[in-house]
Length: 535
Image (tube, rainbow, N blue to C red; front, side, top):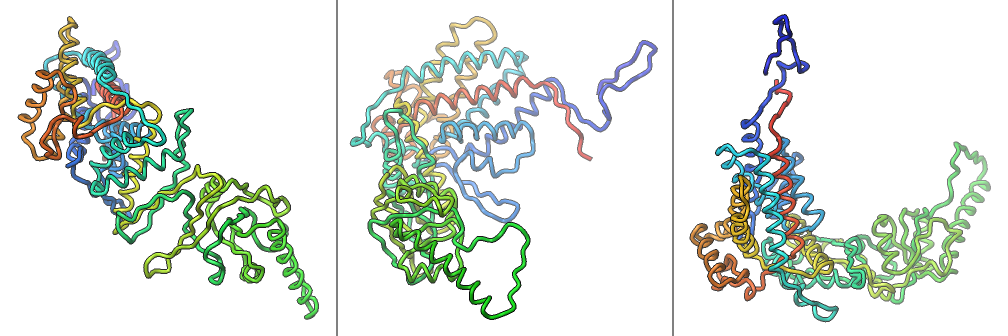
């Protein structure tokens, strides 16, 4: 630490407890920060693309996660370094905003940091580097719009959407049935999409998983799936044209809120008390019957006595249904959630064409399907798979596919994947660098080199010769002036991504470049790190 002296030559302390703090400044601080950011990017680099590897993460309490999704890997990794935390947040914001491309954005940021390190070593000021990066990112984003293509899809023609979702799913563990999963995702989004407002509420799509069966058994249910069964084993398992009463009040005699004590000294008093309770239940059940309900879904439980009475009165019931599920059931069936018994009326009942209970395999697992609803704006994707990890990973993959379909409904421009968009931007940025006098042009060229890191990582993960493949594709793009040539990861035999049908959303790509640039600028601006030293 630098010591300061007053005018009499006596040393005095500037930082409180300064001998207990460690401090990095100047170039050392930047180097340390850059290496932290690069370390995180290096972890994710191998899981980019269709041939990317998965990561297995074990949490402190022994849960194992196997995933290929950049945001999930970084969430689960316990990162300690402050700069690495910035990179984790970078992928999280890409996940919230776009939902896809979380690995690419981190790889991109790592490449930018690597290039910046070389420029810093040549003595270029970090602010000039970040200004150059800013200019270059603007050029790249504009160029992306220039090479993007719009495509039209309708309620009947969903093929373009399915193709784009298949690109997303091809880098995941589920790529062997990506066609069926992509179709499920697109149909789910189309059934809840508001095409006039170009808006999709993903809360209306519920993703449920159950261990057992195989991935191909995954299905889309136009209705709601509840992981509960009928409260009494003898109640009917299938109800057609159900009228559903959705209650959030307990199905039991009211308990006074105050402290109370009931003195019972004779048998007669006990009898009257019991009859009182029974009458209370009778009235409750009768009330439901009078309104015309044929199924009761209750948020709370009810006693065995109530259960018994419900069975006698032929009123099937489901108990302990969670709040979120109740809301979805209410949206799907067009019912209202009733908080008090007195308010139960006929208008508040939900309608469903078919309510059935389905059991799985040899286990006692049963689930309730509520289908053919009045308002089919709420759907459920029901995933089957061999084990829990597989189902969790499929849920994440489906989430990515849903986000991609939603982004395409919001803005229907696409760019081609396989690194073709990055290579094309890199060529454009290189060409634009000559127009800038001054030091910034070094940074702009470096940005162009960093863009190449994504196709390079794709080639590397696919087992191709990275530098040869990249330079071949790049020269092909320049020669043919064709921005759709990319890395042929799947060995199809053609470099043209238009033929391979590999698409990505334009907003996703632009967001990647902008977010990565912002984070790198932020990291480059830090030149002094003061941290409490470890004891």
